Image 1 (cartoon, rainbow, N blue to C red):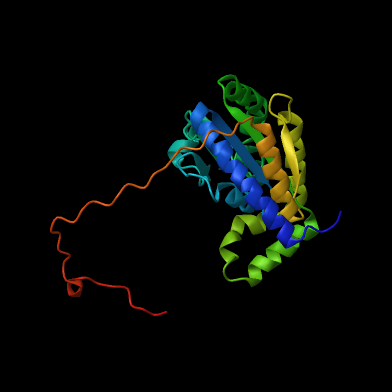
Image 2: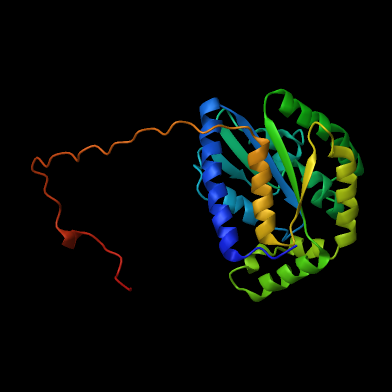
Length: 259
């Protein structure tokens, strides 16, 4: 397919971001609960699309959840418990930058869970998601698929760019050396959890611009919403000055004018 030029991409992205604001207003108005799961290989572009989705949204309505490694206490809990704590209330959208599927990916490949825990997850996950959907939550799951060559190019770019090196953790580098193991784990995960009730939607992510637009377009088409009438806003007059005296500027500390 033809390359998507930067100007066309930015124009379409801006249009979609306006639509996302409309969707956000509808979610809040109708007290909807929306959960969007983003999974995929390291450097596949999950973070980039999440940034574009949330860029113009109210963080009180649409929030991102990216949990750290579980604590000792959390490891002793029901596996899904710490994710349940992050689920939306009415009028909220939650975007999971990685999710409960850690058990089927990194935990499986790196040996952070037992075989019994892994098999139980594959059995329980579809039922867990049916419970979410049955409670009225709209659940969307996106898998960002990136080729071996493109992932390597992005990794090398991050290594060379001091502002991006933080994106490469020791775990990311170790995962790179286990590419085939992750492929097998992903295939097993899909076989168990790509069900009609909560299907996986695969985003071809070698082209970042197209991946972002395709994912956002699908998200917008998957949550029915309507344009609400605009709320009339009027700027009130400023309070009248009844003798207020500002303290002397010499008593305040100002940031130096470097520029």
